[in-house]
Length: 177
Image 1 (cartoon, helix red, strand yellow):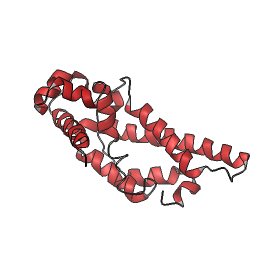
Image 2 (cartoon, rainbow, N blue to C red):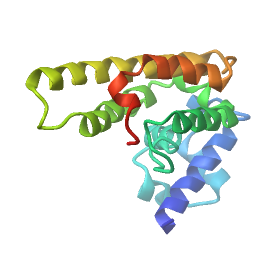
Image 3 (tube, rainbow, N blue to C red):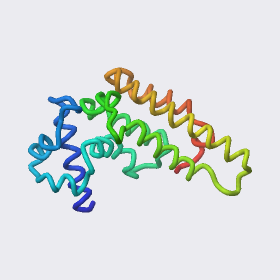
């Protein structure tokens, strides 16, 4: 892991720790750099603003590349990660900053899914069908997850996984992307 990645992770870990005692929307860059024991410029070398850090922190597990991103195991580990950082994640449904977690993650999920599951050998009708199903799945999955966060993550991750997995198009379930 590069030095830059380590610093971004340090800021993210600090933010998640701070969420145990303070509301996400009340944490400032000044609060964060003091808790992280870094300089303000160091923060801005890695993030545009707090919204950028919040989006990174919420999504870093998704973009880790540790497992195939369309596997049940990946989804379960992502939900377990969220549960382990509950104080941070339960606040995300109420965060509507410039880089909102919902919008950024839905956009990424649509783009990435289209790049994996749509190709030029398919008919135009198949491409359009898959794009529509991907869009429906991405929005639905994100709304289900945000509802889970807002409910204080009362539903066990395994049950959430089954609901999300059942809603996935069959073509997304048959690949180790």
